[in-house]
Image (cartoon, rainbow, N blue to C red; front, side, top):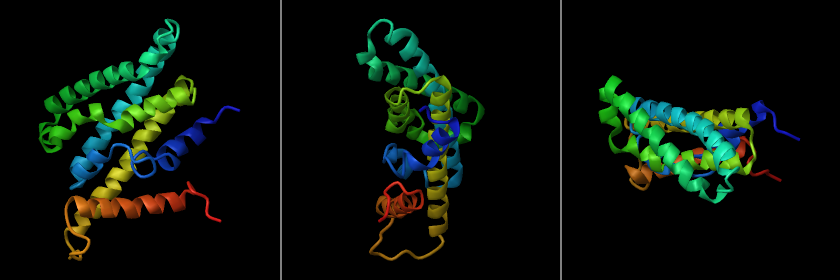
Length: 196
């Protein structure tokens, strides 16, 4: 039985959250969540790239690779699609929001190698989603990424105002400590691992 679009949307945002459940795209999760402005800019770029990558990859896979029996090239083809979309986003952000472009730094071009984006388009193929399902899952995965990024940035900004125990540390160690707590909350709240 085909999954409804609403179910796919909820799975993409919460149950299959790429950052907190599947642990994909962690470099930007740790690197760009020092402030809310950078996190929201990065999240917007990732939502756009995931939605467009889902659409273009669906067409590329179903209308070119499958008829030519070149399915084994899907990973390489999807990486090329994602890289082209990231170049487009980078151009738009650099031209229209230069302050955000400077604050994102190296992380904006690194969306190309963000395994969360590639994971979303590969999951679309593996789950045999149609076009609408692929786009909904791509957008939902991007929104799930956004939820996690904004929560992490808000926590890190607020925690700069309080004294953190030395045993927890600062910087990357502290970011992974927060990520662990957030991940455990997601797993338990959304029942990813059923409790007996």
